[in-house]
Length: 380
Image 1 (cartoon, rainbow, N blue to C red):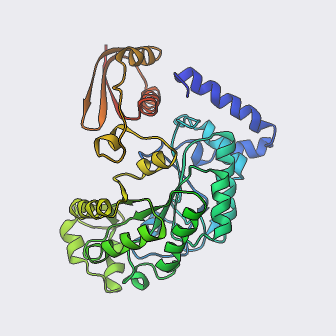
Image 2 (image 1 turned 120 degrees about the vertical axis):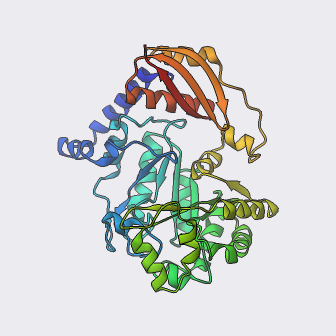
């Protein structure tokens, strides 16, 4: 793992040098202008698009309010171009202890139109970068594809989305039936992977009736745990849910702000998540509050929050202030002190530091010590 900002740049340039032998100037230019070369990672990692658009038309999906259509096209970058875009991204840290990677954002990565490119993206990221990879899917993955995925990345984190059985025809009319997704979990487990149930989004009024049955079936199929995630609603989503006979009163009651237009409004579901957690633990399944924790776990490591929440039983050594002082001093910062607040290491510092340097320092320290980090700078 790189120890400072200079080593990050050296690693990136070394990878770029290898890729330049395989890419034309035109292909490099396309990679540099792609949004993967500029976006900041989210807490779950940097999302990788394997296609544009999605034909599944799930009633609760927000991508259609973002301008994406119901037809899908494979993403235009070839695998080596994608990797070039990633190492050109100033916010991206390469390596097995670098930025987490998540496939399955604005499309389905295992649609017939996107599956082969997804496989090739996984291969290229594993080969050139070795960053931890996660994917989420509703599609059926057969035994041969499951084995192929395991060969490409034995630690990959598979999230299999199943949120309903009874209301599938209303909520996910064009997605494979839940029975096939349970079979996907079984196939991935047989291939030696650690599939995880992705219970997202939690839809109030629906989830309470079904989560116990879904968790039991996922456990029986071979899921080692569950990630439970929230619901974001737009006016169009609310209208579609109502149209298809899904109760919306509970959703509106739990909304954190008025639901108007295309703005995505989060819905309060912490009480349901708590019940899902208790059910998962009673079934001897891991419960991951965040998708990133599932990615970390399947790649054989852990973080401070996973210890605090008893997901793993491991010792934890607090960050060494002298090492942190050395790391941030190379970016021109003076360490004033550190403290841990809940799950986050707060670093108080003094000096001048731009936003990019601050972000990269937080990421470096986060991955080294496996703890969320916030640097608070007192200007000189």
